[in-house]
Image 1 (cartoon, rainbow, N blue to C red):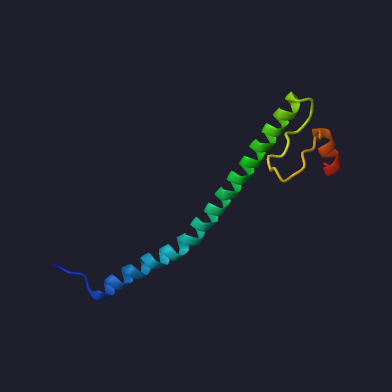
Image 2: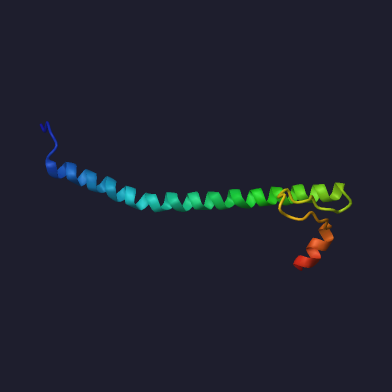
Length: 86
């Protein structure tokens, strides 16, 4: 009956664990990047929906910029779409 592990067995187990971690880590990084991209696109979609709702309530005008350094201007949603050629 064996009572202890040999040093070779311990080193093999450590090597197998290290190999598994080396294989899994790039997959985790890739999935994090994919999740961040999904979150960004979701936020952009929500922002566009809010802008469209605002424009529909205010005779097709978009909100003024909040940055005080920009000169205030009024532009309608249809003018913006025409200028962007969408």
